[in-house]
Image 1 (cartoon, rainbow, N blue to C red):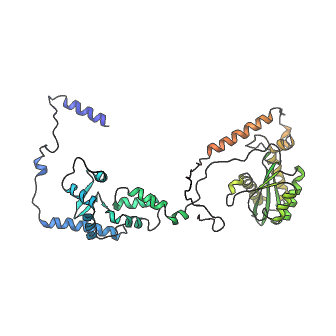
Image 2: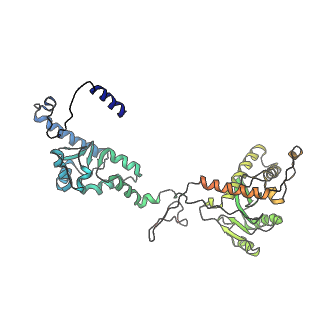
Image 3: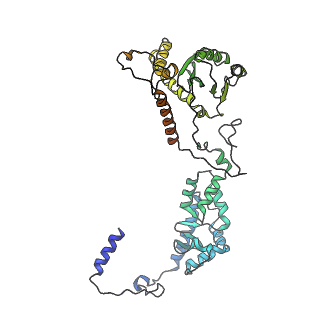
Length: 406
């Protein structure tokens, strides 16, 4: 747009012979008609003073952060060495070179009305009132953006934005009400070398008064969904012994439910030399494999209960588990039964399927698992925050109140 305008000026001036001379703005002859003074009575000056007074009073009545009256502001401006110089330069003329403390106020955008320094429609806050203004801005514990929006309508001083940010970041009440910090870096569980080397457990329900135990093998993605009568450790151990037909696992990953941290379950793990890994408190995402499997089973169970209720539910559950185990998993690229037994279970669709060779299956599985883990890390946007030695940090104390850090 600017280039087109300059081209039009050049075409217009091409028809003239002219000479360009530089004239200092102080020596420039002002247009007489625009600078000609007109007669005005003193009542207009009084009206201007009343307008400023009314403006300050209106801001104060509207809840603006002005902890002083107009007379107190005038006195503060005259006592403030920097602002008194600024008001002097605004009413007269600015020097070509000013001190560093006057640079934020230099040149335009300022006006003096009735002893009050204004920056557009905002009042410039004297130094003595800066702390009180910040306290008033943060009286309702608003977030940074809201505080800045209030300030941009009513008041200003150099560095007010950074002071607002520091006020909000150092407020203990605001910090205690913040959501949990962003996750840092995605740390994936390693893929085990064999089936039932590591299994993940979690409870599902209650759904219509029924609870289920969900078990998933980290290597093959084989899942078990067992209907439970209660949350007792005895019932849990009984189901694990039933599933030991696939072998006793080396590791079991669970959350911190009472059943999993009971002495009876700990004794079962010790007797069978099973390493029991507990996810951090209030961090269910650490046991993400079990959590995702619970969601998958819950979706089917809710759908099946709506269709048939619990009358024929066990048959529907067995049928669902059969097809799930016989379906290729998105992580490994092959079915859980293929990794569990070295073959797919025969189903009705095998009548029309073409048999394929399994010679390169192992390398294909490793490639699929690696690609899937890299995709998860790419989609995860967490960043690691660095801390200095001796720096004070806020820690969420889950024992007292999990919703407030200390």
